[in-house]
Amino acid sequence: MLKFGMPRIELLDQNLINQIAAGEVIERPVSVVKELVENALDAGATRITIEIADGGKQLIKVSDNGCGMDAEDLAKCVVRHATSKIKTPEDLFRITTMGFRGEALPSIASVSNMRIISKPQGSAQPYACCLHLQDSAVDRSEKVSAPEGTTVIVQDLFASVPARLKFLKSAETEKSHIRDYLGKLMLSRADVAYTFISDGETALATQGGLAIDPELALRNAIGAVYGSRAAKSLRKVNLVLQDFAVSGYVSDPAVVTGSRSGQVFFVNNRYIISPLLNKAVDAAVSDLVYGGKYPYAVLFIRIAYEQVDVNVHPAKREVRFAESNKVFEAVRAAVRQAYHSYQEPQGRAETGTANLETTPYSAPELNLRYAPSPAANAANIPEYDPMPIQPSAAVFPASNAHPLRILGQANRLFIIALDGEDLLLIDQHAAHERIIYERLKTAERRRDKQLLLVPQNIELGQNLNKVLQENAETLRQFGFEWQDFDGTLLLRAIPLVELKNPVEQFFRETLEDLSEAAGGRSLPEREDYLLYTMACKAAVKDGDILTMTEMQKLIADLLALPNYQTCPHGRPTITYLGRDELARRFKR
Image (cartoon, rainbow, N blue to C red; front, side, top):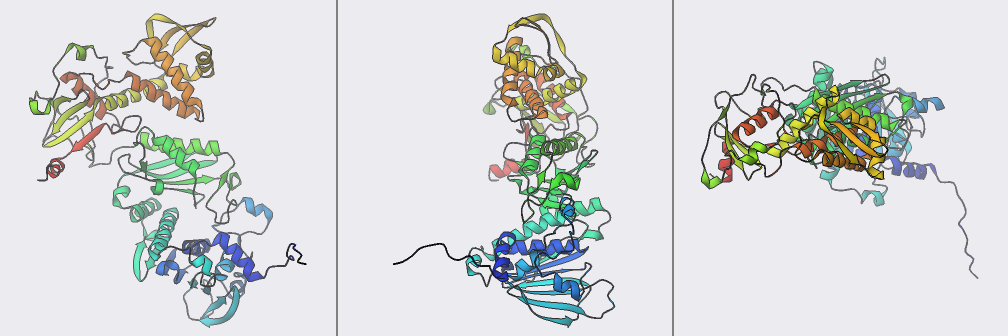
């Protein structure tokens, strides 16, 4: 009779233990590159060369000029949990190195053939030590000729584990993963010179410490990784708090990508993946970048080591912040500050006041409509003091040689203008939204408001009254002023903006929007949401006919703003069609 039961419990042999650990640490060739390069950085290297063949499956070789190891340390470095980076439990909460577990080298050795060649800096010995490993065990050691530093050679990755090998992708895909990781590392440590060689050809390289200064080194690294277009559009980020700092660069709102692959974050110089920080950048640029597009961002966060836990995952790609809300707000504020303080680089903008020449133009075939009308004269367009116009050459290349000419209005929505031979289309609603939004922000800072000639009696229901009480301080900051008489509200003042709709409707819709925005949003986000809403409600609409004077005023006010390219929701305000682009569309 057969008896069924649990198998006997047996101790695993060390090689199998290492292979299990390798499954957590070594997922694919890029995992090997990551561990070896981070070891090189921890060793103080200033030059690192990475060579691969067949996407890293056949060969991975990492050479550095770091501190190196003598024969004794070389023998210990391949023993599991042998490390020079932590010594006490307290060290786990003050981790300053890239690696610290002592798992990487034995894990790699368990799934490959590996050689380690090392010579300490300043060694009196004329030779280096070389260790050969196979199946986690030291096969042999020898003395060889080699420069100071360390070289690790990994061959035939996962050859002893066919089940793992078959899950690897093509050589090109694996190479792409390695390049992506190295690109992020080059940004993290721009002071180091890197060379990445794939199948004998240099795929990526940076000058590192050869650069003139750290800022230039980082900008050069950004150019090497993301291209010159991104590097030429950088805005500096710099926010220093008592125990927290954010620095780095973000790209111009016009220079964006369709994914977040151009956004990288480093916490205490360690690259991390953080949806929290992605959302913080999104919140900072929500009114500058159109939905589905993302600016480049290379951000460095310095935080007390006790305030961040990097011991979340063996691959150390994830971290846990002790005060995530504080981190979110600091990053959002830092990025937003960079856009507020940005000045157009010399050469990208015309200085002085552009010559806005209003010339009547008749083109029936285009059905342009710009003639004055009672409806246009009745349009409530807020008045603004004229400001100098400094159009960006990248978006609005007006020049003194070709003064801007407004042609008229198309479909009661788009303002058409000419800059020399080039055509410009301006979305009147989006443009006016941006103007009002910026004015409201200024009014908010100054606590500006307009008193109503006739205060409005408003009956609020229970829900809206609750919203009012919960957000009273925010609403007063925007310019609302009221008195409460046993459930009946006497509205005395509103924000400094002209309205088409009745005041009561505007106030109710504002409360409703605030109620909708409250869930899951921080206070600054709710405030911005209200600004968007009020700007949208007060702006000229699709279908409003504008006079030539109104169109001229609208464009002048728009171009006086630093962030005129988009409306507060991130939609473009201006489309520029150059003569060459128009000719191309007509296949000329």
